[in-house]
Each structure stands twice: as C-alpha cells, then as structure tokens.
Length: 88
Image (cartoon, rainbow, N blue to C red; front, side):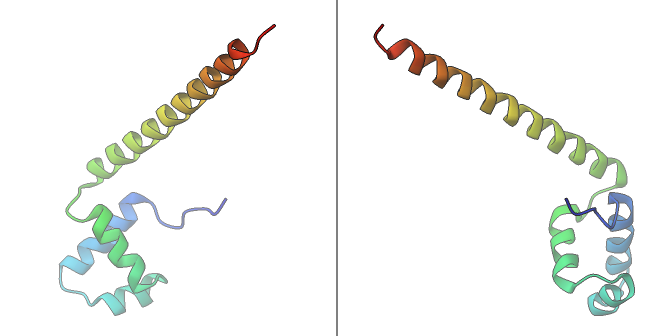
C-alpha cells in the first residue's frame, strides 16, 4: 500500500498558504505535488482546522470498520440461508 506523503496538518498548512495568496502552480512545485492534488485537498480539507481534520479521519476509520462488520454479517446471513434452504 502506498504511504501517505503529507499529514492532515501539513495539508492544511499548504492550503492556508494558498488562501493567503500564493499561486497554485508555485505551491505545487514547492511541495512536489500536482495542481490537481491541491484542488482535491481543497475540496476535502478546505476551511478546516487541524482538529476538524483529525475528527474527519477518525470518523472515516470508524465508518470503514462498521462497513466491514456489516459485510461480514451479511455474508454470514447469506451462508446460513443457503444452508437452511437445502433439503436434508
């Protein structure tokens, strides 16, 4: 799995530089990312504080965990239905 290069704090710091008036192309070159990456970060983290970003990350992790639990429960349910539907 690819390692993240920037933390949420670093991303928010870069976005604050952009909001302060720095050009997107200059920021992209300075930090070694594409302009599209900066726009994606702005769409995801725009207007957030560091605490908000940490909370978002925690909620995304919890949501993924809950989705995996639901998928496992649905697989178990389907397996039990298949087992019970067969005639002995």
